[in-house]
Length: 338
Image (cartoon, rainbow, N blue to C red; front, side, top):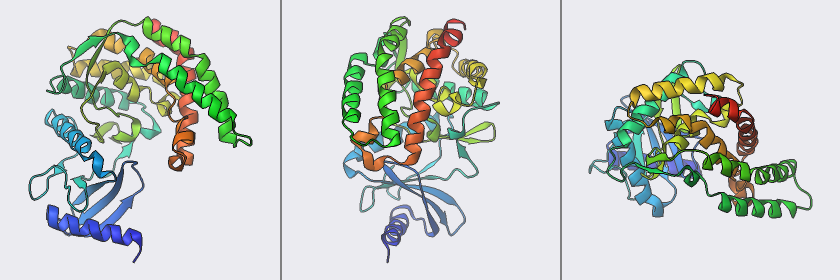
């Protein structure tokens, strides 16, 4: 029996014993870094998303993340329904640590970019999410200087390390040669990133999703089908999370449509979250630009975790670098000319 068959057999046993689910079909889903994911069809025809956690030591954090997802779902955010175990646990932590969710069928991630009516739909769901999470008991919203979005001095040290490491490669691959040029460009732009943040007003920090990138937003036509893969409740800048999804590199690189689409996202957001401070909305593009310029991810992954670097991550590295430079080039037009 293959290792894959062994894993599926163990999953089938856990589904039966812990969840009272008798699987008829189990299919591996090629996605996820900290989890191994499967689509499960039971004998009644219902479909489930099984998420197996790789790191048992991180289960406390995973539990907190699931609780945050459940909290968001209670606020009418489209989060897949979680199936508790027979013992009413959110996560099964016995032989096979896992959680079990409603499978979201006929949906696609936002990795193709946000276009058309999706701008309003994403803005509305994001506004509803942030309005509800403002009441999360883990932390009350506060107002902090925008310079806290990114530690520019730490970024300098990180870029200097990358420049040193990539420069040591005697026979660099095409990606490594490109990466060295990219980190040098971005290192030279850190002063501009610092000025961007220093010029912004104080901004709201509160509990947010934490990883609202395009792979974690599921779309069905022009509607949001689901928000998935929450992080444990941690206070972050609202402007940062708005930009995280609204200024995703894959959307920015589709062309100028983001310049007119992003205001539509903000308008729909404000309709759902009318008490949001206007500064958090008008500063979002500038925050996203500065954060992206100062971030070494995923350029650092090639050096620090090379086994996890697949061609898709190298493609994303190029897209993120290009998008950061494009946003910087259009910032006066989009931010100051709002």
